[in-house]
Length: 148
Length: 348
Image 1: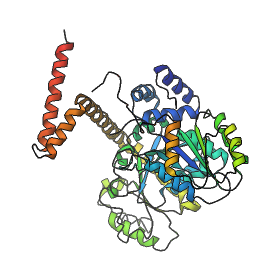
Image 2 (image 1 turned 180 degrees about the vertical axis):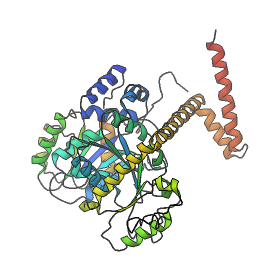
Image 3 (image 1 turned 180 degrees about the horizontal axis):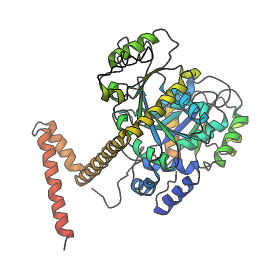
Image 4 (image 1 turned 135 degrees about the horizontal axis):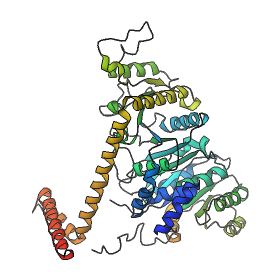
């Protein structure tokens, strides 16, 4: 039985658009990649997302935004995460993000922006790389002095 | 991600969590859930602070509205001035090891309330409807002063009996139209219920579900006390024993939820007054000790067996050169021998 730490990911949809197909597809793909995915559903406030990320102690927050309100929502979520001591969490944004906004999102700490047509396998690979897990999910977790 | 590992870091986390730092509490839960060497250190420090929370398990088939009920019950408890910790459990995929934890979708009302803490947990290979570290996370939330802890089990509905040893009160949730003969409430599930809930009671068939439950429990005659006290006098012991009530709710609208919470609190009072509470605690602790012992023994055994030997044994069994029982006995025998040698080396 694998008892090593699991990568935990929060998938949330801030704002008012109710289109969650993309978020659900990504959530399922991440589950199939061996992550524990906390799915919070549509129409989440920035406060709710930051608080859920804190309580669930996630490694990754994935935000799906199709409404065009990303420049209003994402900075607020980033600030609320920092206020809760969660500034080190890997934040990804997916959805419809105009090219000129991508550098702005990166500048406030968003590490990955994924538009329509992104392969879910690319998102999985990106998360693994960013978390330093290229060699597979768990790596070697043998305890010291227990070499086999 | 950086994770606290040193004893000093663990101490700092515990202190911070006790002072109300929710981030620290969340990190402690992760430590405990990952079952690393930190678990013992955390629980040794926190155990003296536990024993105050009342633990309520909510189980039932998928689609009966467990998450919505947990949400509504939590609001009711909050209106009564009690704090609530929630553990919502969903299954880990046996194929990928991943999990999709979706119970928060129905609990959004509770976000932002400092008197509520919600944690989603994946089963991580455990069967029986709970996550492997559920009992330890209960202890953590208990130590942090939550008055009530609600555990929502995996919604498979057939084998979720572990909750009976983890919770003080077990609520089994049923809904109309989920199967004419109440398929989900089979042997085992029926026995663990302290309270039955027929949720979605505004739907057609709710009465039929209630009656089916009453028939299965065989308590139709006993529940008619308000019609002229027809309680039978030829069963003095049973008259004092707890009879699981059947409560109708519409969790989405909060209907029946105050009555449900009243029933939970009545059950709590019954357990405390009858001495049953102490017996259940003893059962729970026995279960916990058993679990810890099994894990420790298993870990010790597994660490002693080299992957190469294990693989060779597997291949031998595959090739039908040996049966799995003999192979396991042989592995155990070698482990015992190795332990004997170690003791010889270490002693004197």
